[in-house]
Image (cartoon, rainbow, N blue to C red; front, side, top):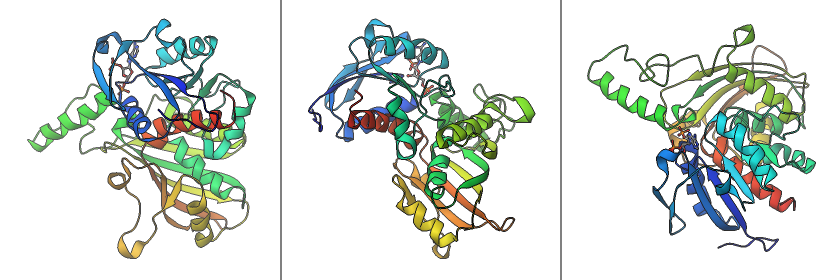
Length: 344
Ligand code: A2P
């Protein structure tokens, strides 16, 4: 057991403990000095009774029920939208803080949407449901927040290259199965998770198609960025693409600032921003890439250069582990920030 500055220890319930994000959550909690009193692992009835070893204890996975989260200080939810919709208010009513990974609560004006390095102050509203952003929004807002105090962000164009783990464990299995079949010569392999073959392919389609021809994932990036940055009128457009990568999302970002910022200065600002790291040495093929960043905590920036299409423009490349900073790590950091701010 660990103690923290308050000397208090906290009861945690994890809904979705058997999922792609849940597993990473448990891996992080095992290694981080989180002031943990007890850990309850919850999933669907399918997983009830299975055992997972965490911090030296064999814990039994239980079915998610209102009784199962009673007594928790924090309830982390990364399961389905329906479960988030149902259980975040139950957790809040029971006196816990629900930290939710779904898209259900993010745009609710009464729910803070938090990346602690960017907008931890939004936690001070004292809400009991807190949302974490979409895994492609988090790296972007961190890079923007690094530049914004020096030269305000005016316009953002982003294209993403998102890994299949963002969809969940079933999508990771689909990529493996299809890759084997494709290497054996199969083509046009039908999928169950994605509408087309994902192995050796890429799909400019994440979520569902919405207004103006943009997908729900693209709208999430735009709306969540505006909310987190407190820039409701930010000009922004996104194209989100699923790629046959297991873990880590990458993003090509073009940003227009109020005043020009030289690439060297941008590099220094990004490197100094908490939770970010810069790998930018083209002479030795130095740039972040998904294989390298999977399993690492920081948001990495590289390929930082002038955007030649605009005098105040910068272009850059971001890569970050979508299961860690994009989900589980950010959720744990929110709990830590709330403890530090004495809100729990
Ligand atoms: P289970 O493993 O029992 O299906 P992923 O994003 O990797 O697909 O993981 C989804 C997570 O959400 C899993 O832990 C899954 O549990 C959990 N889950 C899915 N449906 C429910 C449900 N109805 N109640 C509780 N947890 C659920």
